[in-house]
Length: 631
Image (cartoon, rainbow, N blue to C red; front, side, top):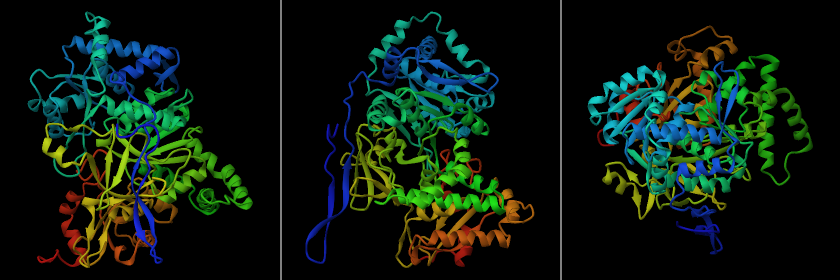
């Protein structure tokens, strides 16, 4: 532990004003306080056992019924009993403490059951994205020496079988669709509960819990080794840090993001070790129905989901009075939220307008989230101030946060008590953040990973004097709130020598309903430009609302009305940057960036280097030729 008890005083940069007096200008280092001490035995299964002993009959998980219309609560005692049976089965299959098992599945109850059972049996649980290729699966199986894979479907099982040549000898492959849980529990017959108890007793927070493979925007994925302590110390202190979220019985979380990603995985542990109920949505086609029936108190989302909700709501308003009413309500929500940050607060007139907008528009939108959702934790990319104010004005506070796989997801997050829209919040309890001389965000704390699997060179390179180098650029304000300004490796330097971070421009432009993905270009070029792809889902509605005929994506990419709308969106995005940083030209591509075509990672990040390589001719056409050899 780097600190204990009270929050560490911030370290300030200094500047000299015109009177010659030295004054603090910005914070260079900030540490979240350690609110609770952890003992070596406080592993993930230990915390879940503690909860079951305290409140055996209280619900911990809700499962959809066979008909899919309702939810059936599973008590702490019943869940723990099922976990123990599956853990005994894993032991019965011959798996030894420290062995690795892998799960390849959508987000569903069995994922969580296998996760906790694997940990209870002293195993390392390795996630595989359900969209992974044979080569990616083979790499993970070999790198983590996986002994058992539980895949969701027979198709996924066949992919794992095709990767078997890269796996250790004797690899077992089971499918959830072909009774995997029953087959595992059948192996528990001759294994006493004492075997599970013994393995848990021998576990410590320094033991490996999982290896999460980074999406790999460049090169091969790296296996991030996360211990039980990485999860539990962060969760234990997080429940004290933000008790409003999960540390009470009314807390309800519906997970729909991939559990293969550390973002959802940490929230799984956070909810299970809190006091509320966890539920799963395997297929996002059912998400609206599941939100309505489960009625979560908070959600985990990425900015793209929140953008889609806003854009869909605007599009469903169609035209005429309905559209004018929605846009008035949206402006009112944003103005109301901004007024909350002033000393005077919202005026009487604004409060009255807000009350009317709530009756006409906001309640319907809140009903889309289940009607009881008070908070949305947003991560995985910048949200943007406009959407942040819109949702807060709506009555749903978006707690924007920031983290990486290497930091067990959240390292900073806005809190219910003080949410500064436009920032990703202060360093969470136990986490220290420092801004380097080059503006890079450095992190230290018990949630930082122990290293990359089988890659000591990359591990050594990732740290600087004990601080993990995130690769992201940012700044801390005087309250310790962190603002992300870009990625160090993505910084563009124009031919005129101007440093440009593409993230802000890309995020602003991507908020337009027509836009799916944006890649800003301009390194060693005379000006900044962008490649833009269209959102095929939103396109038909947008065309209809603008009185245009049905068009394919390729046709829309060349249509003058579509191009005019995109250029207006570019002008709005440019308002937030200087002339030298502004986008001067765009090229609209007739194909989108997806995971299937290799341009997106499983966590929906653009593989910038691949895009730059594959669309080099389109980029050169913007500038009238390639970069000069002496540039």
